Amino acid sequence: MSAIELTISHIGSGGDGIATHRGKTYYIPFTAPGERVSARPEDVKGDGNVCTIVEILEESTERVKPSCRHFSQCGGCAMQHLSPDFTAEWKRQRILDCLERAGITDAHVRPTITSPSGSRRRVEFIASKRKKGVMVGFHLRRSHQIFDIGDCPVIVPALLALVKPLRSLLPELLPRNSEARLLATETENGVDLLITADLTMDLDKREMLSAFAAEQSLARIAWRARPQDTPEAIAARLPAEVRLGGIPAILPPGSFLQATKAGEEALGAFALDALREAKRIVDLFAGVGSFTLPLSALAPVHGVEGDAELVKGLQMAANRAIRPVTTECRDLFQRPLLKDELNAFDGLLFDPPRAGAKAQALEIAKSDIPVVVAISCNPVTFARDIALLLDGGYQLGPIQPVDQFLFSPHVEMAAVLTRA
Image (cartoon, rainbow, N blue to C red; front, side, top):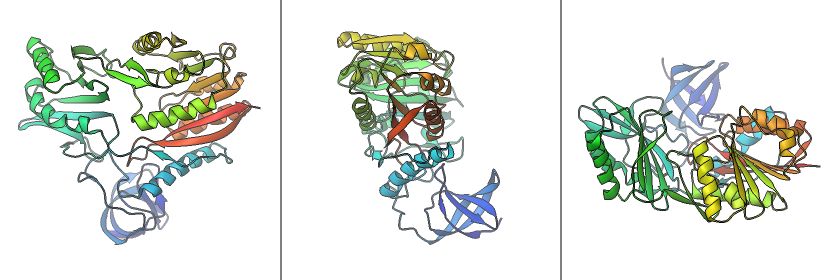
């Protein structure tokens, strides 16, 4: 199709610029509000078209020079061309928009707290072995193809420094025409690496990985054939340890961790302030204890989590630190804590996955818990769950956005709700 002239009205939820022309919607990546562009429609998206920029005819004042040479090629970043101030306010407004669509129009959303560049401590690389060697990097934008990463202003230097050594290691490890996922997490004792690849883990490969762990000063290398398999530790040189509220905790291979230390601390400080008067706290979807352990400095905490390995690690960390923590392994999607169970507590925190916690929110709404802290990484399900609590008689206090995913449309948020 031939190019058309478009004016960008706003940035959509996926980070693309949005324009309308003759009643049709166009999605133009890497544009800024107010820009006039010449763009060529390419793929159909819903009732509109995704476009490719031919020329920027009039630049926005919000446009800045991207900090990474891979930007627009790499599928990881969508908003690196936008000013930090604009992005912070856009993420704040995104929460407000989702709340409004859920019928909540009087929310107080604070300014966004943004993690610094080079601070993301957890990343998943993709490796692909072809005839000429192994590529290690990320997917190309809107593609399943992989490109070799050479730079990344988002992740901590220790994770980026691992890419070149992995390119040397993997040709001997992976079968031809195969792919692997490499989940790397920075810990107190070095990088923790989980390899997901369908291969035969024989003695030679185990020795190869053990030598690699020693050469690169890794804390641990684990492996699994498929994402649903339980990881097996191949080389565990040092504990894969992180500090949560100052308490050392050992991560099971592949376990979730807040993306940045700064983001974790911002969310934790919000929760500690909201629950400072509580005498007994329950932490739902507790994970490794990112909030359970810091909150245990205030009062006894009961951590509930569906993953048995995470529950075991959380309890061990609390026991070593002599903190008043009890734990329970329970699938909160299938068996949420009921009203009578919840009423044993006077403070509650829940931090579910992106799907949210609808079943659990319905039970919280029936309870008498005076203070609830809701944390989420998805403003859509966050708004839905908050609306359920408001329907149950809670009042919404301040909401704190936290940006742990620089240059992406993602945002995390924490809210405090109270009973009158």
